[in-house]
Image 1: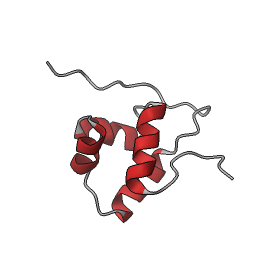
Image 2: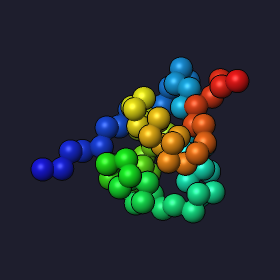
Image 3: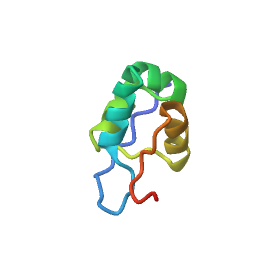
Image 4: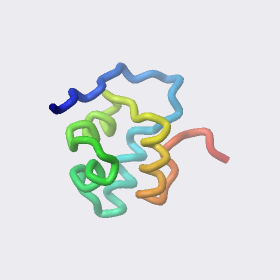
Length: 77
């Protein structure tokens, strides 16, 4: 059975940058489907995350940063 994507309203307190995900994914020449497969989620979930309509878990952010070789959170030195 498929789980529905977790949708949460964007908040200013989150340090995750959805635009950084989309930019880094494009620079890495990866599709949303390819990223989703590596993360174990649906392409729809990646789309929601990139648009700021869903928030990835801390573990997912770490996996994304490793996959894309780029920071996806603000406030880094």
